Length: 206
Image (cartoon, helix red, strand yellow):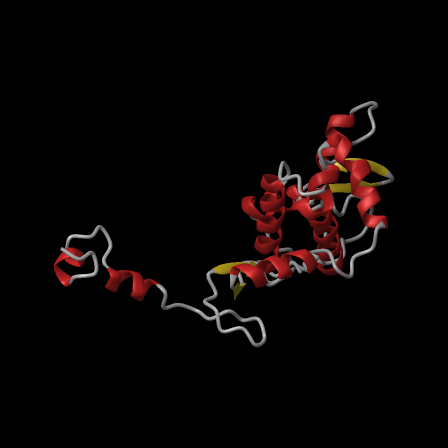
């Protein structure tokens, strides 16, 4: 029996017909290339989850010139390398009642009455300094997931807009494998940073 016969092909684990069908897919997106685009390549920063499709030769060429941190300065990198010694987590000075001071600094709930700092998250004593307190615009409550996202980016919950975006870019530049000679030990931390930024972006903080 010839191996090319239709009878032999019918008992193959994968028939020639299936193999032909599997070649149908996206074409290589490299200019002038007609080969199948069998390999995905990321499109870049702020386009997470989007990919180009290249053949094996052109995906190698693309990866050689790919720079996730293009346009970002080195000063922020050095700053976060120093902060990496504490795991990119907030720290506070040790002293009297430092634990309470740290907690209030995190949620921004400290109020001032007559020059003395008092923990008054519900503004019960807002008028104690004399006269009626000025009306304040209602603040949207920070959800638990959003608060964790701020902590992941080493930011206070009062951070907004450009501050969040700047911090995100700095952290990504530190933990991306390209900035660590291909070392992938920080990939889990990088995923946490990207996820935290996306949460805050969808919530309208930046």
